[in-house]
Image 1 (tube, rainbow, N blue to C red):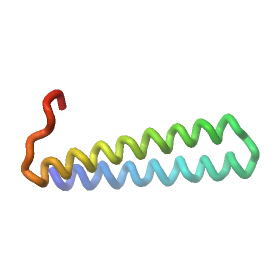
Image 2: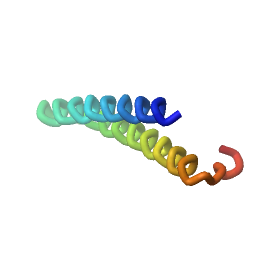
Image 3: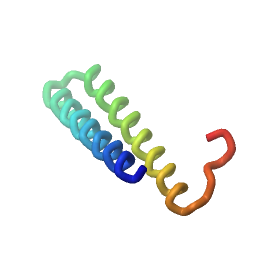
Image 4: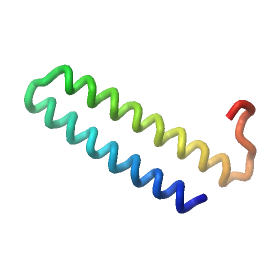
Length: 69
């Protein structure tokens, strides 16, 4: 489980770096639409990363997940 979680976090880190590159490129070109798209993408990736970290911390602490999760 920990290996899979690490791989998932590494993949999310790669995706986040790519989105940041897209954001910087769009910003330097003055492309407002692509800037907004890249910001939304970075936000979604960061949310997914935070969710995964929260799941891991719950599992590592030995507590069960809240109902409905």
